[in-house]
Image 1 (cartoon, rainbow, N blue to C red):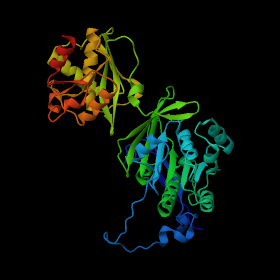
Image 2: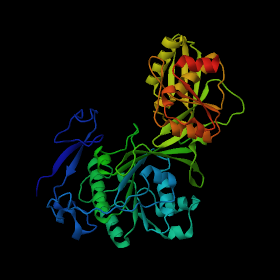
Image 3: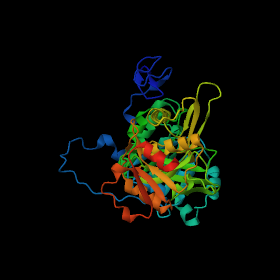
Image 4: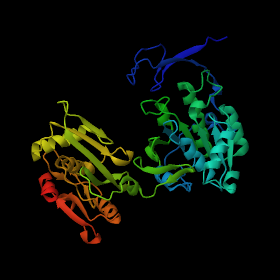
Length: 462
């Protein structure tokens, strides 16, 4: 018998080493190497269709002019938020990876997708739940109809060889795997969820998707750091990586595209978790703005962009005297270093003494904002709380603040103004450098252009 060959893999990034190492030279993580058995075998090709494997394909290179390209029609689902994040629908033969925390709603989202495609055969493969458990969840979803349920098939299996046999017999139009960490291939002698098993199972599903032009959705677990579990090469193998985010104690969920070969990687979709499933939120500005009857200090509204989508978001600030000598700086949903920079601008350029005050900043709705157009809203909310003067709830802001206190222009200002105008705001503060070529007669909202932070404070607080 041949000697068993083993190798060591980093559980964080998938780096392979012939011996155990304390620190991974690729990702610099400690104590992440595990030993796994390697089996050199030609039978690493899945058994789903042995007559059409990649090993038997033509290996002769083709000139780019000789390649015949036919544009595939995307599969448009009934979920408009998912269509937007995927770039306009599901591409045939694509491999999509969806990651998220436990209990966030990944399985619910995928089962809801499987049950709302009545004209297509959908195979939902689960390695974590029994068919009765999936049936119980399907009964709770409001989108279930008898016609749609007839086209959705449930398979509880973890062996890729058995899964490919059922796929060959059923010939589905869409395959959903829940989850990739539970699958195992007989060609690899290691436990399910290990680095080599996850990589091999994903490679087999990728080969199947490309050769049969069948889209495949993979549900993946995430680590405590928020990264998708398994080797980093897993994200490079798939076509699209989606992150399902949100707080389990709140009802809103965000589906964010991290990587997308068929569309924009900066799109997001917003859902509301209800007892009967996930509901699409078509107007996110309504849920991100609190409904209040009286004006409160420290609260402002900013016109931001998430990908191609304009939305209005509420910025909340609290400034109080420091009780322990050392002031605290805390930001939720906003970069703390950028908040410290804006506080330094207020100290240096505007004369506000905030070095002896605690400053707390919160972005409402649980969003993580990286758009620099929210800078003006942040500093106005901080001064509003510091001076205890409320800003009108019908005023919003869209501008970046520079280190010298200048109000800088932001991109796609027309969409930001149109969104504020649509929601009934009365005035919006923008940079005067954004006013060039701007047709103000198209909007009912009053557009106020400013060049310095001091101008904003004199207009708002006198």
